[in-house]
Image 1: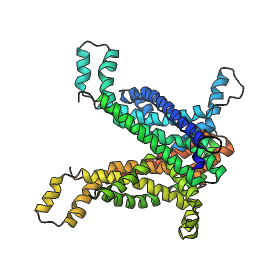
Image 2 (image 1 turned 30 degrees about the vertical axis):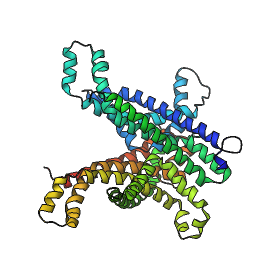
Image 3 (image 1 turned 135 degrees about the horizontal axis):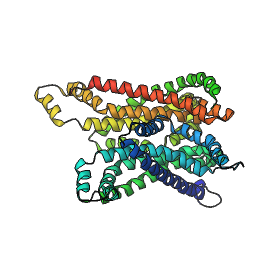
Image 4 (image 1 turned 45 degrees about the vertical axis):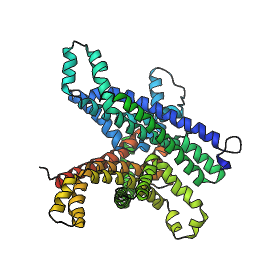
Length: 230
Length: 225
């Protein structure tokens, strides 16, 4: 137990900060994922075959390839890609990308593929009459989408998005391979220096369970909020 | 784009795929067995048995697979007692540790899939069987199980694909599976994109095959049409 205490003798404070890091990466990744979903959902729903193809390749590739492989691509290839873009603008110095950004981006792209599918399903399951009615009421495109369609989509999407969040949260453990000090990495360091892997990895499991449990509670609240009137 | 590297790394990655497939198939067989047992336990009326099965699935679905592998591979070896038993023969091999972790993990998800499949069977169907005078055992084997298989096929297909992606974590415990070899080639040649295309292509191909096999099975087991 002493090993888990706060202060100099224990790893409690380090693990606490690592937990915050996990949450920060997961939230950032989820937001990046939303951004990608916002970009690709319209492409998925579009009638244009080519745009469809682009969006379908994105979701198929990401959902068919292991997360770890995607992370390695970003970890080893991220610096090269950024330096290549920078060299176009005439900047040729070495650029080091921070592990947080690489990790959040890699997990974000993965989470975005799942979110895209969720939003596509939610929008498709909204009754056609809703689109027509909002048009008839004389709302402009913007109003149609943000005031009529989106609130209904959110209600339908929240249960599935909560699954995406759980997947994203658990995927953050894979970023530990890039050296970012989140729960897994910190446990690895602690286990290595105290030679007590069983304790630290079990404690990591408890931390993840706590995070998934707490987020379930929060999401349930959101769900009731958005299902008012149903 | 280094086409030569892509061609030369293809056979290496392909032979690593065999390890990936081995890991996948062995853990799926064990996982299906575990899943079936825990699904039946979940449906048990005894609250302790019920809660135990729920706790198992909650624990394994609420924590990352990586933690589970690390606990089994690095953690269990620490218990002195285990080292003296025959279990140590199994637990000192990273291959078996990975399989134990994968099987327990997929078992938890499978138990949820099968449980919900059993629960969605309409009571009327079972009652119809009873009123025809069919014994409970035959109702279970000839009516409930075939319907449950059909119900759970789409979800189980997804689980197989998720597990296939999960086997990539075996590379973190020194196994040279497809991802492990891909990472090795990337870190020696610093050509991540080329290797990603080849290794990702192999994974996608496997996803494609699994997806179509499940569809075939779905058609075989569908009785509505």
